[in-house]
Amino acid sequence: MAGRDHIGTAPRLPDYIISLANLWHRRELLWNMTVRHLRGQYKQSILGYAWALVMPLAQMLIMTFVFSTIIRIESPGAPFALFLFVGLLPWNFFSSSLSSGTDSVVGAANLVTKVYFPREILPASAIVTKVVDLLFASVILVGLMVYYGHTPTETVLWVPLLFLIQFLFTLGLTLPLAALNLFFHDVRYLVGVALTLWFYVTPILYPIDIVPSKYQTFFDLNPLSLFINAYRRVLLQGESPDFGKMFLGLGISLATLLIGYYLFKKMEPGFADRI
Image 1 (spheres, rainbow, N blue to C red):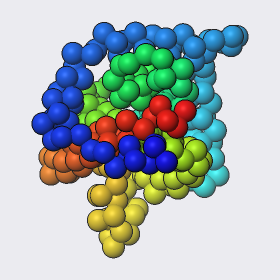
Image 2 (cartoon, one colour):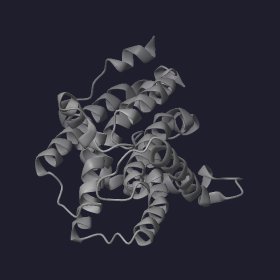
Image 3 (cartoon, one colour):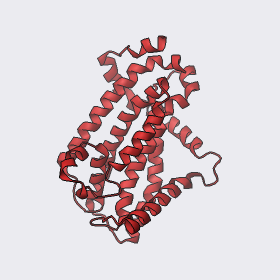
Image 4 (tube, rainbow, N blue to C red):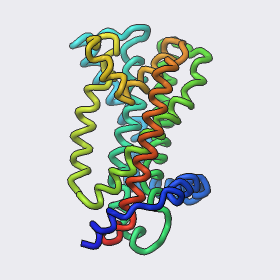
């Protein structure tokens, strides 16, 4: 099959590095794709962009009732609703980005076959679209902080850097999944199963302190665990992030991005044959 032959054709390393560096010069195209995606995301819905507030708010209220009233999980240093939402925000961004990004190439089949452009723009724009949803949902976080009288300290300035690291990891993981989903449509379903399992092994509903020490290493290698714990430190505890774990998260994110981008470009020549 011609498509399978293409999968084995890897770009030369210098071309690969230049291609990755040139992504910044494609930012106008990325923006246009993002706007297009945003316009179609809530098209013909009654609430429109309000869904970006309604869904996380409903999720937070239900989980808060179940896990603070019925199961009674303790949340150190903050009311459970606030503790939970600081974990839900980055998780929802990650999971929705991964799901949307995985379908991004398949969903733009007409563009891929008719117009040439860097195909990595498709999963990247899907992720940037979820950044907009994240910003809307952050209004709820601000409201919760005001309601509980929890004033953030200057450590909140770490949030943009932490989010950048998480963004790089999300993009690096999404790129090869978007390509693989074009060749094997089962990938989208596997992503859904993996996200369900990943949710429960990430300290979103519970503090990391209750995890038995023998499993701590596993949680330290879970990038989402590193990110969420760091967000809680800077937003809820008024402490700087653990620099050792932050650099570990940065290393994992950069490695994921480089490997993911390489795999995406390696499979890219076969896209047209598979659509």
